[in-house]
Amino acid sequence: MSTKQRVFSGVQPTGEMHIGTYLGAFRNWVRLQDEYDTIYCIVDQHAITLPQDPDDLRRNRIAGAKVLLATGIDPERALVYAQSYVPQHAELSWLLGVMTPMGVLNRMTQYKDRLAQGHAANLGLFSYPVLMAADILIHRANLVPVGDDQKQHLEMTRDLAERFNNRYGDIFPIPEPLIPETAARVMSLADPTSKMSKSDENVRSRVGIVDPPDVVVKRIKSAMTDSEPTVRYDPEHKAGISNLLEIMSAATGRSIDDLVAEFGDSGYGTFKLAVADALVDLLTPIRERYNELDDGDIVKVLADGAERAEAQAEHYMREVRTAIGLNKL
Ligand code: TRP
Image (tube, rainbow, N blue to C red; front, side, top):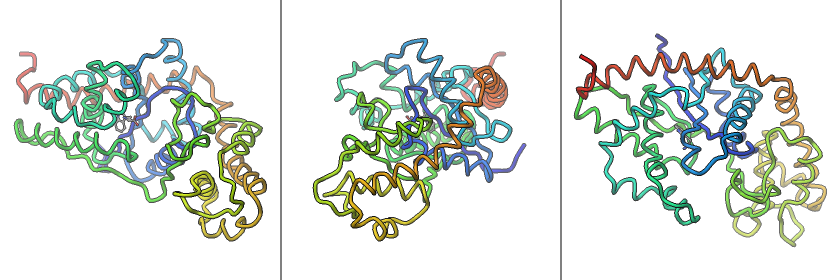
């Protein structure tokens, strides 16, 4: 077995993947393949904690995997599969659930946000972080690339792993967060005080990873800004322009200072076109690869990945069942 540290992360197959997810996560996932034993999971069982149309779910699972591959995730190096194909995730989630205090889950901010958004509470939405802990621990992952919004869940995962180990012996490594130096935090184009989100009903709030150039240009042109004409970085007073600066900096690798020096007085119209151009350059190779990939091949990648993931998960689960006293005699 490989001696590399193991990385696990997951993405929900819901709706269109946007540049916030690429610049904040996938781009980093691609780099991690060089150094680590990487596992990237399409977490469809998490997705159904909110209602999903079955056909959309099937379609989004394929499309999500296709985007991952198009960005440079290589199934020869990374393990790519769908959570629902590997029943050990749900099994371990149950075993961890009996060790999870209600009070801890009650404090999860994502759960509270969902309720505040008007979603009906259900047991799955409540225990969402337990399934996430199972995803990570089932593979004994050491490192988990996550954004700010998932840190609390990872903290809970660490606590669960420790509790389990204290009770049953040293079974799970305690996973560490992996916060990339380069992850961009991309905000909504329509409301730059909130994060770019695929669940936002306003499609003008985002740019899709595989959007064609004309759409990219249109979305960036219509991005909300302010009426003071200088391009400068001031997230508090100029959230829209600052977001565009972040996006362009992430897309080009140029510093914000450098961009401000060039575009400070050029006017918003010119600046926006430059941002759109930079994004088109970044996204074009990804979109081209996406269009070349065949759904049938993706189905095969997911099936092969699930087979390998299940073999690994089952190997570890035997030890877990035995530790708890649930192994077949
Ligand atoms: N909850 C994560 C999100 O919405 C997705 C996820 C599920 C995940 N399981 C995971 C991320 C395990 C990291 C590790 O972004």
